[in-house]
Image (cartoon, rainbow, N blue to C red):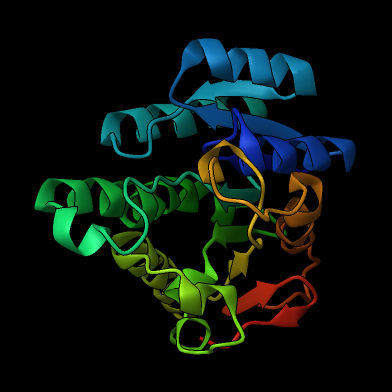
Length: 234
């Protein structure tokens, strides 16, 4: 049985990723800050809830201890938790240091916290995999390409946090070769996270790339950035 942790999974992309992985036969620990919403989501999916705030060291440590105690190990980590506090052209005039720190703390430092806590369990797995949910908004190629949606959509802090996530992925892949680390761009998706912005595709479609990279075999790739079926230039 493959033991998997998905962070930020009580709704949206994380929820759908957890659903598809449960369907694929994984034992999924659904990580969420809210005990009420997380337990409800886990019950709906047939997953297990674990309280997890990626911005809190003690919460992260406790969550990984729970997984070790209840499941005996961890094979797959999906770092999905993320926030975006401001969007659009007005961000340049309104963003604050506090807001930027909060977003980096969740989106990038949160990846470090959870990965560090998970590595002892992952290293004991016969097929350890980490999937980091990134974004083309953190790709120089995408944001400078007029044919891409990201070119037309300023995202100062969120985009920068996702550039950090992609670089973390590469560096972890180099530093920990016994674990496969890959980043994914799930595509612009219609969820609560993108409420008010038209054009998002179904969450079921966007979760597919996360699930595919979360279910690779021992000969699977590492250090990659994938969008749908192809590599995404950085």
